[in-house]
Length: 79
Image (cartoon, rainbow, N blue to C red; front, top):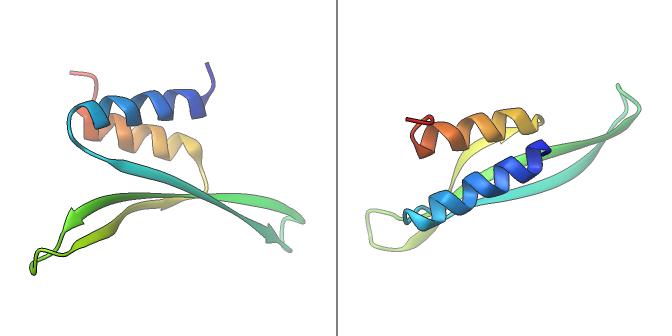
């Protein structure tokens, strides 16, 4: 199984526990590396002090392994 598949399974497990974390991805062109890079942003919908719904950024990274590790930790680290 690839890392994306693992990340989406972890995301689904968190949803079943009541945590709704979105995985957004955006592509950028890197002139330095002369290729497209994918940036992953994890956001969670929460309520702020005034009771308004807001999306809070939990993680921004260019590596899918960081996304998988973060979601695994949020799930309980495999305990």
